[in-house]
Length: 431
Ligand code: CTP
Image (cartoon, rainbow, N blue to C red):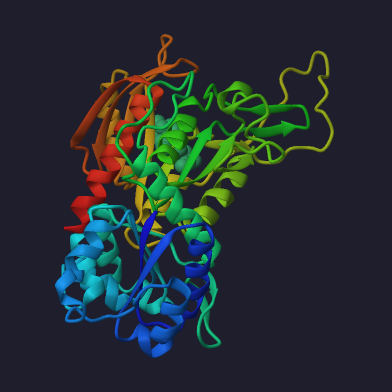
């Protein structure tokens, strides 16, 4: 593969020396394009010796080969690591004031950026907006790692390890070269949307929570987890890093043993949970680094106030034992109102039956306004619809209750419609 390795000016540039070696060891041709600031951290001789190619930030060198156009046009993959706040800003505004930014404008191959900067810079609304703009244009911006930064401070903004950047970038380039993933029996047609979720971390909750009454009984619901699992698989096929918080999924939904810690689904990080409290904890932990959270799980609204450690015995003639219920926190509403990460897209589901007070859509619209989510996927349940079947029929509304899309078909097709709406929403927010 012909790779352009862009390096912008941060201390983490030293890690890109290792990234360059890794890419070269795997047989790729790599041309390093540093910025002027990057050359203050690591000099051109290091890049040139390890790549075997010239390394300059200048557009006025080697002009007969028109490098500011040729490098981008000839690349199969462009990786920028580290991508500083300044580089993200220049790329987002389309500047072409050095060889790297010119290359970014001429590249038509996958572009992967690995940001590195201090937490304050990463979380600044200007950087958040620049990242959203780049992602909306199809640039794959990898989440920075959390940990020790240049000084004594710690937090999100650290450059991921070179092995991880290499693996992610090469996967993205390989998928782009072969965009239609293998057919996934039982999950409907594969996505053909390409890699529009690449570089994003998405969290999907699926299944139904169970609230223990005693060691052998629980209050549960009929959700199989099929729609949530289809959402996770579709996101993975579209390039996202996926965390699936799996609440008591039906055994066959992800595979015979999948959904358990001992048999995770390849490439999907599965966190098995049982109760609403466990689901809340797992979703919130993952949401701290997520770009999108989709609450597809059917969450119990109430739980028994306490569950004795021993089985509750029936005492003949005394009637039913009272089960005192308390209300569970609303995980979706909390996420929507707290916004654990700036720019995070929060999506809910609403399974409705319709009643004398309103239709399925009326209830969905009211719920969208009440919960504060960016998108709410409304579907009719009951009479054999919704639960445990392979098809679904949904209306997607925004936070004000406006219909933004409808979809009916396999749960995989509906999942892709949800991700389409998320991508459209993120792109609109970036404008
Ligand atoms: N949800 C949640 N936490 C709860 C209940 C629901 O996060 N305690 C989420 C679900 O995952 C789903 C959405 O909220 O994305 C709608 O769930 P639903 O059960 O339809 O909403 P309720 O608030 O329970 O409304 P209803 O009055 O219809 O029961």
